[in-house]
Amino acid sequence: MSDWQNVFQESPPDLPEYLSQWLLDEGSLTVKMQAICEEPCKVNLLHQDEIAIEKEEAELLGLPVGSSAWVREVILQGCAEDWVYARTIIPPAAMTGRLESLLTCPTKPLGVWLFRKPAIPREELEIGRMSADALGLGIATIDSQALLWARRSRFRLAAGGILIKEVFLPDFVAFLTENQSRDPRLSKRTV
Image (cartoon, rainbow, N blue to C red; front, side, top):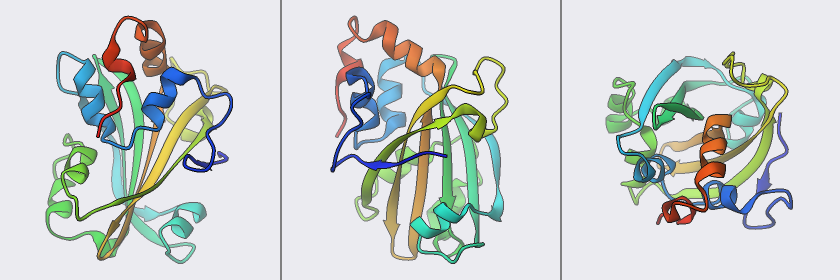
């Protein structure tokens, strides 16, 4: 799917600067996206269910291969366009309390909640590229052979971890490309 790189070790040489400001940002992507739109970002739920997760996902979360977890897939829309595909993996042991209740509200972005919880630290951020075809989204405006920039990281909970992968869709990259020199908010990092 993708060769992931730990961003603290080395950034890919072909990563454009205007994208690096977004991919390498350690804050909430949703909050940063909302800062450049005149309206809140919209969350479109694609899928949410307990299913078998990929081998690599299980290994990253310290689960046995073949494990099931709660998987939530959404499209984050900014400025009324599909900007980011996000896949969140939550092991059953982590499905408690407020996190479980958040999943009953499919239009709420999980990232905003996570970043308000200092007791849930983010671990290493990794970036990579993956083919649009590998996502299986079937969005007509995306070339299935296109390589899309993505980032992923784990968040540590007492009961395990949460894995979040965010893939930058072509409309978002086009927006950043077109507006990078005109809007200073596009190159600021959030904290």
